[in-house]
Structures are given as structure tokens and as C-alpha cells.
Length: 242
Image 1 (cartoon, rainbow, N blue to C red):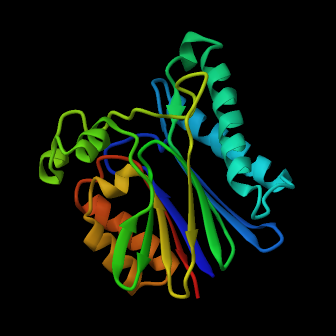
Image 2 (image 1 turned 45 degrees about the horizontal axis):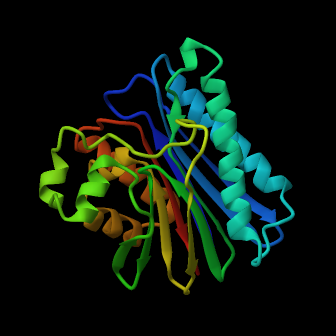
């Protein structure tokens, strides 16, 4: 397994409110990959995403329940605990009010991937030249697309395309999507924030990742997003399974 991560504040933002973490060997043969895209005024997005990634990574390192039988429930529980931590922080003062973050994480060995997901960051799988989004966008636009009320072309410039419907820390309770995926030799997985996917197409993302080693792929994806305007912070993790 080869992997790399990259993050950039983009061209229009003063602060990078994205956070990411890679945990190699977090439990015997398991690897963990985590990304978060924070939101909230007064730099609170940066606090929310970093707080969440730190809490989740520490919980994963200390967990004894990442075996195949318990991993889905354990990841869900970890995200629920992270949600309570961020939500309670947001209630402490007006300064932190309204802060929250997306969270997408994948825990994997060479056989199986298990992911937990909240928000509109994404997890993709590229297999045999085909790209598949494994996560659902918890966003206003995502709901309209799934209901057939909006086309992908209409979604690209919709005024509410950045409104998310689920985030870590935005309410006391949270619904966590948990995903399992068998891994084949040659599979590529990409975790990324919407600062990437709002700027480049899935076809371009797939091409860059297939044509480059993980570290170069991360750099070139960020470069491609910035060439298209760099409207937001950009974070990406690329994992190649060999």
C-alpha cells in the first residue's frame, strides 16, 4: 500500500480550515486516513476540524475494537463522541457558536476498507479505470440530486451548493454513515474536501491519480484545483493498493 496527503489553503482563503491525518499501523495491519473541512466564523472552522481529527486519531490509536466484527460500531461511536466534544465546545461561548466540520475517515488493511462519513467531503474508489463515489454528500444540493430535482449541470452553479445538512458539532446528536468495501489489487482510494471536487471533474481527478504516484498525484490535484480558481481550501489523500 502506498499513500500520501496534501493540503493547501487555495487562492482566496486566508486560513486553511481543512485538517487531515494518516495513521500507519494504528492496530496491527490497519491504516487510518482522516480528513475534515471546518466551518464557522472567527477561524472556528480551523478549530473544529483540528479538534475533530485529533480526537478521532487519538481514539483510533487507543481502540481495541477495530477487529472485523466490531469496527463499524466502533467507528460510529468514535464519531459520535467527537461530535459531542465539538458541540459542547461550540456552546461554551459566542466565539465558537455555529462551528462544525465535515469528517470522512477510512480504516483499511489490504483486504477491506471501512469508512465513517459526515458532511460533503468525499471518498472515491478507482477500479479498472472507473471512478465511484463511495460516500453520499450530506448537502442541500446532494439531496436535490438524489431526488432527481436537479441535474449535475444545474448543481455546479447553484447558489446553495455549499450548504451542508450534516456536520460534526452542529447539533447534540449525529447520524453517521458507515461504509464497507472489499479491496482488490490495483484499487485506488481518494479522500478529499470539496475545495477539490468543486474545482475539477471526477474524470480529471481519476486521470491524475491513475497517472501518478500518490505524492505527485496530491500535488497535481491541488495544482489543478488552484488553476481553476482555488476558491476554497483543498485537501486530498491518495491511497494505492498493490
